[in-house]
Length: 84
Image (cartoon, rainbow, N blue to C red; front, side, top):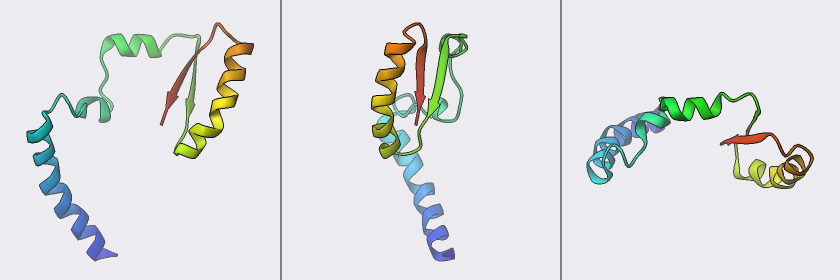
């Protein structure tokens, strides 16, 4: 297990700078992935008529699809914010 952790750390140290160099810092959305969002996005997310649903896996998103359709039909005034 410790060997895996060491390999992952070495891979991260080498891969992260390479990916930033290759794709550019903005293309990776690094700031957004670290939780920094723009004021405009924050304002959209803080509306009182938003319903936030979080799914962890692709399977959960697939199971949510019929539920989200029914939810939108029943409560059309609410916006759904889905995070994965």
